Length: 583
Image (cartoon, rainbow, N blue to C red):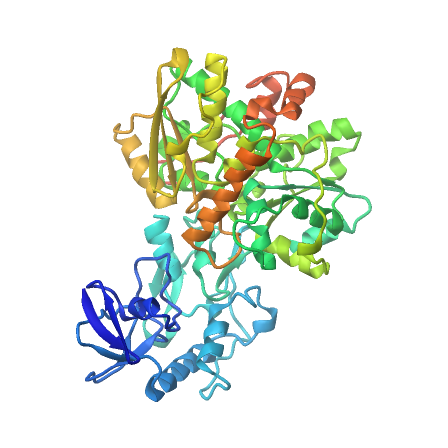
């Protein structure tokens, strides 16, 4: 332990603690732009967090400078305040002056810190941004280098958390910027579109592609029948956009808001999450019994799929051929629902509300049109839906709860927990156990696969199958380590669940900002509460609407019709590419 004085107050902290962290323990907040509580590597690049250490010749960056015994620190001297203002003025002078039209307005840390340090004018020459290149090549993300402040957060999350290593600093001094490797556009780069860079970016340098206007246009067209689905995670975090506590379960208000926005039918992705478990569970059983490729891996997360296509193309046969719940829903909306409702599928416009920016890319994949039409027409993130609700002038907290529409609105608790890491695995275990043994698990709560540990393992006895071994990972860097073990033959599992984002969908790239592990825990807790305390059914195979779907339309799991509509193929994109792996 070391003892030091900060602004006249004595504080004792473990050796190695930074001044920034030490100040927090006594309620002193030092402004910063490059440091982030979720990222371990801090470059100390922005210099906004400078403080004065008695005896020192220069101010030091508190986010990287270690606290020392006997040290006397001043965080609010005139010298510190003046320097922070100058630093912010230089950052703002090289930043487009378009705050009111920026998608990050209200959530921009650069804007917040400028206010905190008292910037009221920019006394240095301002860069001319009348001409600039904005990368809009990706269906998921938009990159505007002019808004980059070189904080390095995106580099850290892309490298350390996601293991993709796409983003890198280029150049020196005032002209340096963060760029994709080889300066490629995002559409051509080895990018998974997970959006974690957009989550940690303090400005609008990387943001989700905004598809709000396309959805408004569809809603206002009387010739189009617009249906909407919402991912499991949305109901546990949409409330944060309207000042409700993290982890508030707002299912009924979410439905009511969507109706008020003008959607013709409000359905639920949870319905096809249950359907995914039926198809995926039977696929697993088929592989185990027939000597198929094991371990089988989940295919719900499009960022994870693109990660595999780029970096582990030789392991693509391990992926389940099941489409994600989003895409299954789209295919059924334009076949099953169109048939039940007597609507021309050509006039049906499917909108998804997703926690994930990569879902925008997934919906655009050429193979996602098994009905003869594009499965999903538009994908909005949680943040985009919140913007629509505000544009419509709805008081979200005052909306009366509403119910989902039939025939694609009924779901079980197993569908709900898809939104948390381990949820797909837990839902699958419940159903596979019941199908094989003819009875339910002694406890439907499969706790070993829950939580925010990087990799979780479990094994259980499943009747005639014997011991079934499973693994769960979230965050693509963790997934990569697990894939290395599979590639080397050291991973002795039957089934692996991977989610691209930390915490699973509750930590997706399109969720409310800012992000933290505490928020992810609270959001996941809300989903587990919905599963255990709210829903009548907790196992996917118990869903009466899914049972009816099979009886009247699909006929059987892994049957000809379900294979055509609900399963897909993958395309190797990396150096090990050989052939397309097809369902």
